[in-house]
Image (cartoon, rainbow over all chains, first blue to last red; front, top):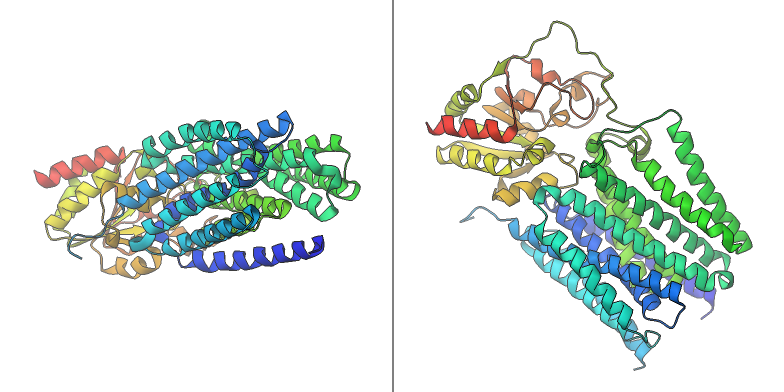
Length: 98
Length: 456
């Protein structure tokens, strides 16, 4: 595929995913906005993919160093994000017997 | 299947899991499934990336993951629930830093080969990444009260902020058109870092829910831009999901304050008091025992909480009082304003932490019609979100903001540290109404005294 074709495919995906995101989030209960934010935060740590390619690839020292810092920052978000979301969600309880 | 194809397939599963994660998040019942789906998706994404042939050296990756986990895990497990907004701000900073650093490395790796589209995307990623990094750090410092939470303003601040942003955009344009020179790149980074600080300095604590949501959106978008740059569809999907989530939350927050994005970002809302208190008005101060006497005869009570409850860690005392009242047969409900606290959903989390069942929590639209038939509205640490001036005084800065209509209840018990105005810097009309009982003191102490008086 030409480079131009790739750009269009990617834009296509971006636009569709954004609309999907808007629809999904609109239906999230207000009750859960804080855990929602910590979850999307953890998901946005997907930047770890790009970071690993830099830190684990065959590159010069500077690139590897920048990549390693980015991996550390992303994994802090991944581990912290999912753990705190779990911690918050465990606290939400309904009235007993209802 | 070639390793590349396999990775692509794993990425596809991972993207589906992220979408399911958000879908499950729509209801409390399935929300924990959502979190697990998200975590599994991330695990697959990392595994799929490690399988790629261009990843040859695992040492630095492993070390960085260990270091990151050692930072992230204690923060998530040990931080008190009142500090969740701070943690969120800090994690936006981490996420944005990662995006900025990857963009920087990519620029020096293959900057000259990039066509204008990719150079533009790279510049956007770097700009958003670094401005979100410093902006979120500053938001963290404000939420942690390392620096004053009031807006920090100086003359001409909007011109200065916009010129710095303009410098960044101009530099980006030159880089896109000329594909260099590489010497200009640090200017772009510097402008982005500085703009992030300038953007958040004039924003007050009460606007933090909106700001945190906007920063959330930016952090997601910078990941999506990284996806364009690396031709990675998983990054694009995850980034777009995150970006739209932040966007929706910030729109909801703005709507709940009847303000625009521009007004939140550049309005310096909550500067030091502008309005002079009208002469000759007095408030009626009562003791916790008086409040207990009124509560003991009430048949229905609506509790309204705000940031002050978080500040004095009073959520457990609130829950104890609610339990006591319910045991006496009182109908107790909690009213949650969308922007109460320092981040979207902050009050829900604190009350859940204290053990208040979530079906006692009511959103603004559901609870407002119930105030006229309620005996007591008990306000704990909230202020502007109850101010009737939003309905009645067109010249008030908060005019038009949807409020919890506590003034319609038969009696209002308002627990407040002092008579100081709220974050909007304006007087609350509510204090001077005949049915309002002001009880001054630390929220937790006052509540404990009310509980003791009710029991005694």
